[in-house]
Length: 142
Image (cartoon, rainbow, N blue to C red; front, side, top):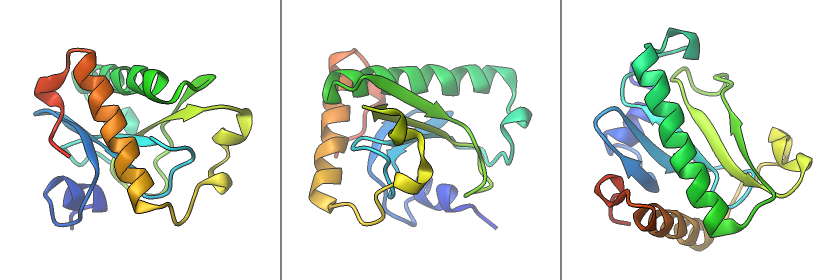
């Protein structure tokens, strides 16, 4: 059975995509820790990050860095968080989010019902920054 992330990637479930390439995608999470909280997800369904081939792992972390730099420019955080935990969905995913305090690393502080307009705006801010950093070919239209 397909994971929820595969269903998002395949367009069966809507997603706010900010990156798309042949190996992976990045889209905003539906329960963000901060505005702009993004998931970097390989197209291949791989359950555990330890099983990701080396070249794909390097690519995922490179894309996460691009996303993090865009978040730094778009949201001016003190730090950019990165987390790989794998409990919610059995499909490898990297959480990348702008952070203003250590409280932003507590999953219990995630926003459970974010404003859709604010989510759309955050996605567009990231797309704009990614384009400004020279990644236009990987940035889908809003």
